[in-house]
Amino acid sequence: MTQVEPFDLIIFGGTGDLAMRKLLPALYRRFSAGQLPSDSRIFGVARDAQSADAYRNTVEKALMHAVPDADRDALLRFLAQLGYQTLDVQTGTGWPELASACTASVPRRRVFYLATSPKLYADICARLQQHRLNGAHSRVVVEKPIGHDLASARAINAAIGSAFSEDQTFRIDHYLGKETVQNLMVLRFGNALFEPLWNAGHIERVQITVAETIGVEGRGAYYDATGALRDMVQNHLLQLLCLVAMEPLSSLQADAVRTEKLKVLRALKPIDAGNAARLTLRGQYRAGVSAAVAVPSYLQDVGKSASTTETFVALRAEVGNWRWAGVPFYLCTGKRLAQRVSEIIVSFRPVPHSIFSDTGTPVMPNQLVLRLQPDESVKLWLMVKYPNLDDLRLRPVPLNMSFAEAFGGSPLDAYERLILDVARGDLTLFMHRDEVEAAWQWIDPIVHAWAETADTPQPYAAGTLGPDAAAGFLGRESLAAA
Ligand code: BG6
Image 1 (tube, rainbow, N blue to C red):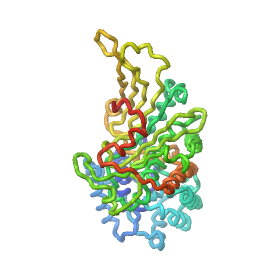
Image 2: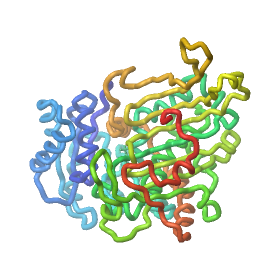
Image 3: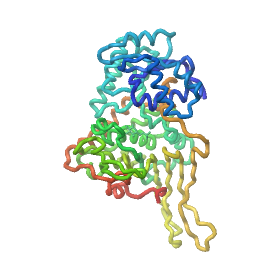
């Protein structure tokens, strides 16, 4: 694996949950793999008044928890690259010190990672500009949620855009950094097999599922104001839909990929007050049993007596273009479900005529199942005959490619790849502002439709498959589950 050029990474929100649980462990792993040069520097930035030593101690504990098998020597060398700056985004305290720390070294790539509330993005970008830290060597990284609707997303994008050009702006959707998600592109465009069949003529339906067993995990206030539609569908699930539905690319250049994804988002047929009751299903978890442990209800988790926030959502989307006309794309996600599984199931149409009807065994349509997590794999379900029987009997069997078995080890964490892509300046796996805004443009009317109706999310017990109506709504189950 190649080393990236030395760079300075400045993490706003450097003491926060994202920095401690995801970013710093990802950086350490790439450092110990030799991809992060030892003269790169990382600055944690936060309001807490503390010394760099105290910060390094906190990071050390976080790393020992996140990477229990960390090499002691590599860990100490990594910690030696860490600095800390106390800074108040709004009052301006600490900015001159940060500016001089950043400019003291020879000019080099500078990455500002905004691991803070999006409410601070505009102020941080304005201050970076005021202190001339937004020059051509600088890049800014922002996390979702970028806004809570189209208007707020536009405002955030405009604020970032007044300090940084689009080529300097890296909007993270960590799902795009997942190994199997990238494999989707390779599968589609690196094999001659699929493209001729990749259309409404041969594909009957697509289902994209991101099921979680966890609840709201101490993020009750954020989640209750957000819900599953904005938290998961607006970004992760729509990005997956784009990768399945986009037209073949002319190249792997960031512009080519992002332009094709944008076309898909803009082709989504609207869901609004006129059809939301038919095309959407919402749920909210009640108390139940998850992984053999009794867990409280959503309302208990967020400490409220009433809430209409959805923790489960299923949608029937349609991409209105020649390739996909009439093909339902089912999107489904929820918290406190029976199993943690993220997968994309592409169901092909049945054979036009079965010569096996006399055998009494139906010919099941083929399915391509891409499992993103856990147990990353690709399965292609084919019909075969049972061996060694007098009579001819058929059954579906998967051609099964497990990534762990084929390549050994476990895939890189999405953040490990994405941070290195930022350092390299590769925007392919990051969202363009137009994509974020097009996604909100499709999501907003659904939110409004739900707000206008007296219907509320349907209850489901934690640890189950979601509301009772979900099975009927989503229709035929996957062969994998059969
Ligand atoms: C985040 C959501 O973007 O993605 C969380 O805010 C969710 O609510 C998480 O739990 C899921 O990510 P992963 O990688 O664990 O599937």
